Image 1: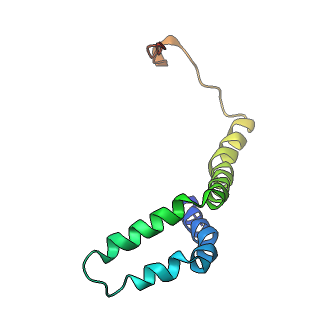
Image 2 (image 1 turned 180 degrees about the vertical axis):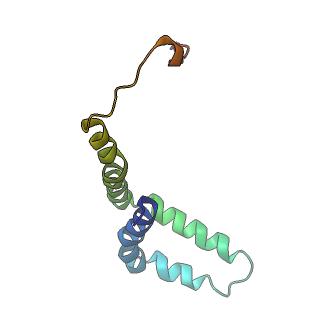
Image 3 (image 1 turned 180 degrees about the horizontal axis):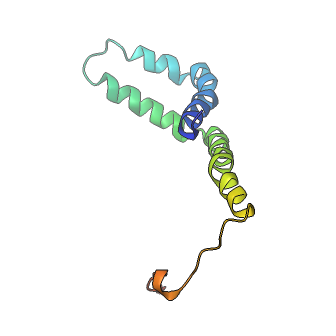
Length: 103
């Protein structure tokens, strides 16, 4: 499974049950048949509900961070530890960025 697919599935699993059990779910369903603007009304209700779900958001962020570690960081660390040649850092391949000024 690719990392993007795993993140997608993780999001579904984190939010599925809480969303379907929340009062916002039937409220969104009740918007059906109320005329034009259905999609916008449902999107507004869901956005409001999602904004109040900091614990679920944190759970998903932790899941994605773990996936990032497993699929990107760990393989890179293994490559380095296996004796990959060190990069030659010279003035010719370093881009100097202007420093930020705080004021």
